[in-house]
Image (cartoon, rainbow, N blue to C red; front, side):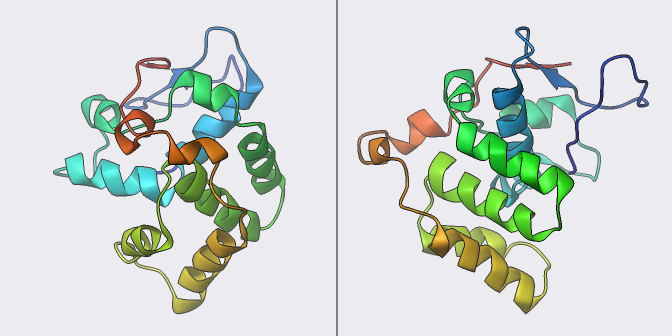
Length: 159
């Protein structure tokens, strides 16, 4: 799946899942874009798909951080903004950040997810290097359960 931003007023086609925030806040929108383009998100999504068609019901089953969490992810929003205007190397940083800080995966868990995707050895190493170069997960990660972090959230709208 490839998520993208479309400016208001543009027509994009049919069978699209559209997410938006009522307050038009940019930080959670960019953070959500980073999450939805991550291997963690796609790994979960693929578990719910029987075909290549991404249905709305499948999207709603994927665990996404809450709106409150997304609103606080200024660092992720900056990384996503960088990835939108730079070379592909920034995408590795976004993916690793999402895995480590939002889904709170260990390096071994992240590597397991990466192994579920076809990629070159060099790409896999770039993902893992980006993961290892990140500071530790948010300090609150020791006190937040995985189910709290990774529950599907109705705080955004998919139409």
